[in-house]
Amino acid sequence: MPHVIVKLYAGRSAQQKAELADEITRAVMAALNSSEDSISVGIEDVAPPDWAAQVYKPDILGKPATIYKKPGYSPPD
Image (cartoon, rainbow, N blue to C red; front, top):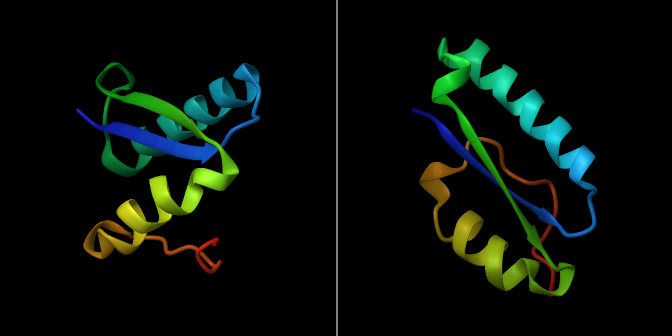
């Protein structure tokens, strides 16, 4: 039962989020041989000024063992 949570800068349209969820679903199905019905995708908007405190520090720096694709940017101030 994969559940994927995507956190991104606020401002994407509902259509963009739906397209992203569809692409993620297809990728999970292919990579894990999961059925579409077993996959869920959540998308959380984060205001750019809140990114460091709400995402970068707790989710990226705070959980290094869970990061399989590291970002190519420095933490925002």
